[in-house]
Amino acid sequence: MSSDLTFKSIAELAVLLEAKKLSSVELTQATIARTKAVEARVKAFNSFDETDALAQAAASDARRTAGQARGPLEGIPVGLKDVISVAGQPLTASSKMLVNFVSPYDATVTRKLKHAGAVLWGRLNLDEFAMGSSTENSAFHTTRNPWDLTRVPGGSSGGSAAALAAGEASMTLGSDTGGSIRQPAALCGVVGFKPSYGLISRYGLIAFASSLDQIGPFTRTVEDAAITLSVIAGHDPLDSTSFKTELPDYRAELGRRNGPWRLGIPKEYFGEGLDPEVAAAVQAAVEHYKKLGCEIKEVSLPHTKYCLDTYYIIATAEASSNLARYDGIRYGHRSKDAKDAIDIYFKSRAEGFGAEVKRRIILGTYVLSSGYYDAYYLRAQKVRTLIRQDFLNAYKEVDALLTPTTPTPAFKIGEKADPLAMYLCDVYTIGVNLAGLPGLSLPCGFSKSGLPIGLQVIGQPFKEAELLSIARAYEQAHDWHLRHPNLL
Ligand code: GLN
Image (cartoon, rainbow, N blue to C red; front, side, top):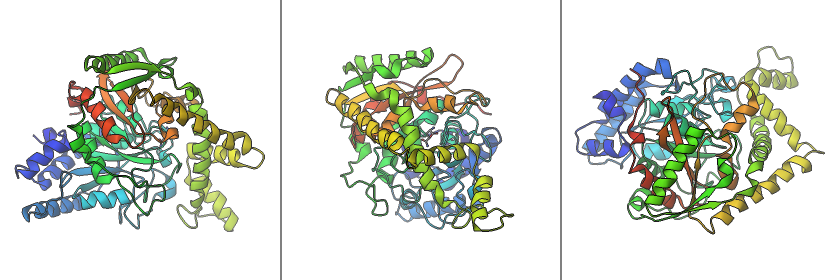
C-alpha cells in the first residue's frame, strides 16, 4: 500500500485527502518509509528533516479538519532542488562552497508552496551550482538512475528527477538553464516542465545564468504539472525579470483544448548523434499525433548548430559574474590558512569550487574580458537573437514543436569524462532556454534495455496552457508514465 501511495499523482492523492480516506501524516509517513527503503541506492537527497515534514503534515491535516484546506497541493510531500531557499534549512547547491549555509529566507516558489499547504520534504542533489548533465559534478555524491543504478539520472536536477521516479516525493522542483529539468525528466521517465522565461519568480533561487534560469516542476503526469504551475507561477516584484501576464487556470484549460494542432518537426533535431531507439520512439509519438488529426509539418531552425556554442558563452559569462559573490567573505567557505584579504579570495575559491565550476568561471571571465568581449560575448548575443527568431518564424506555421528531449537514454556513471561529451547531452534542450520558450519532456517509451525515453514538446512564449494540452493528448493514450522502477 505505502509504495502504491507514493506513486500516485497529485490529482489522485488530492481526491483521497479531500475524502479523508488518507491523511497528510499517513502520506508523509509513507513517503519517508519509501525514501528510507530506497535512498541508500538512489542517493537523490542532500538532506531531509523527518520531524519537520511530519509537523507540516500534521498542520495540514489540522487545516483540513478545520475546513481550511488550500487546494490540490494541500498535504502533498514535495522535494526541492538544493538551490531553492527554504528559510532555516540548509542550502548547498551541492557545493563545498555552501556546505554550512542556511537559508535566511524563503524563495518565492517556497512561499507559494507553503501557502498552498504543501509539505516541504527534503533537499535534492544536483551538479554543483547546476552545472552539468549527470549529477556527477555534485561535490557530495552522484545520484543514481532508479531504472538502472549503474547509470546517471541526468542533470543538473538529477536528484529531483530520481526522487520522483523512485517514489520519494509526489512532486519536486528543479531549475533549468539549458535543459536541467527536461533532460533528467527524460532519463528518469517522468514529466519535466520548464515554463517560459519570466513566468516563475527566481527570487531565492541560487543564480547560475540569470538570462536563462527558470524554475519548474517534475511530476508524474501533465495534469500535475498544470496543477503545480498554477501554484508557483505569477508576477513577483522581487524578481525584476518576472513577467506580468494573465494566468489561466492551467488545469481547467486542459479539458478545454483538444486540438487538432499544427505540429512542427524541426529537421535539425533528428540528425547525427541521435540514438535510433530514441528516434523511433519519438517518430511513433509523431504518428500518434497524426492519428489524432494533427497536421504534421517539417520545419527548419537553421541556427540550431550554433546553440551549444552560444549557450556556453552566455551561460559561462553570466555564471562568472553570479559566482563572484562566493568570496569567503560575504558568502561561503573561507579558507583556514589564508594570510590576507586577497589570499582569502584565492584560497577560498580554490578550495570551495569543483573543477567544472572553475572551468566555467575561467571561460566566462575570458569571453567578457576586454579585447575578447566583442568577438565572443557580443557575437553570441547576436546569434541568440537569430536562434529565437528561428523559433518565432516556425511558429508562423505551427502551434508547437516535437523533438527528442535527449540524444540518448541514460548513460553509464563515469562514461562521459570529457566535458564536451557532457555538453552535447543538451543539444535539444538548450535552444529553448536561449529563446525563452516553454518546453516539456514526457515519457514516450523505453529502450530495449528498459531505459525511459522522453518526448519534448516546445511551445510558444507564455502559451503554457496550449503546450500542456498538447502533451496531455499524447499522455492520455499511453501508459509509459504508469510504469515504475522496481527498487525493492
Ligand atoms: N547541462 C547544462 C549545463 O551544464 C544545463 C544545466 C542547467 O540547465 N542548469 O550548463
